[in-house]
Image (cartoon, rainbow, N blue to C red):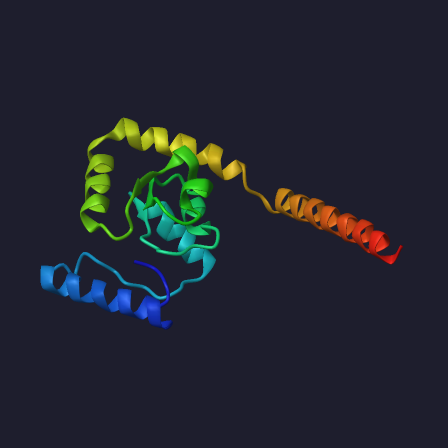
Length: 158
């Protein structure tokens, strides 16, 4: 598990996971790391069998795309930005339903063909997002807004 444990929302989840890991007696099998440098993060993704997050609110959803770029199958919430960002390259579960997540993990672990399909789809999904395209779209939107404001301002002056 990688991620900060300093912000209140993260800390609560972090502590709950630590408690669960202790209660299951699997401390030797679970590593809980704070934020890590990008090179370490890439190595962690590359060593993963599955990537998952149960985030309730996500502004965009970089982490599943990062995992897809490292050819890791993804299980994410069926809410927030995840369905739009991940498309058909991920499995989905209700972020408030741990049983649903566990079922998706089991499905993925037991089905190598599904793993390969998600990895292939993930490679394609990642290509849809890049900084150049983001900048071009942002500029396009800003130009449209500016043009509308100029037209509106010239009409209200008359």
